[in-house]
Length: 239
Image (cartoon, rainbow, N blue to C red; front, top):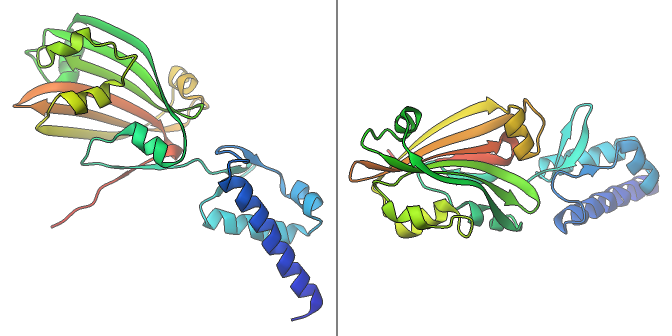
């Protein structure tokens, strides 16, 4: 190997190691822009070809993502949820080394209307609890939650302050369920959704609509809306 090639290889390794360590240590945070190629060339005193090779390897490693015309960004962690289980959102976020927070924006008890009954699939429901909230990973919105609780099935929920504990976690801990249903779809974020998720209007979002039942009666109907690049649904099957 010639001296020039050896120097080139060492420089390439140093650039990759430096960028990797800055990403993994959190100096460069999820969603943060990586300097442009010409800026990296100036910083490291190397050719654009070397920088492009390093960035390509970081893409393959799942550490960054490159968007045409927009630039290169540290990849946000993608949570994987088993479709056949009820996920613990706080645990998903913590598993990626981020701080979980939950904010309740609306909690109201009311008489069930026609739309509520259709959503719950429970014509016997009379009183419901409507809850709207945001799950956050660090400072970034992770998912929006809109939930109806059938107070005929879970009367004790009427007196719970859900600003102190997320309703999903409370239900899993306190209310046994015997059957669940998932419906999964994709939407383009409207203006209101985009604002709450801190994304651009029109951004693709994953929507999970779930209902849980006990002895044939609906307990809750919840809609979870995730930015499409931050969530993935996974199911494992046996014959």
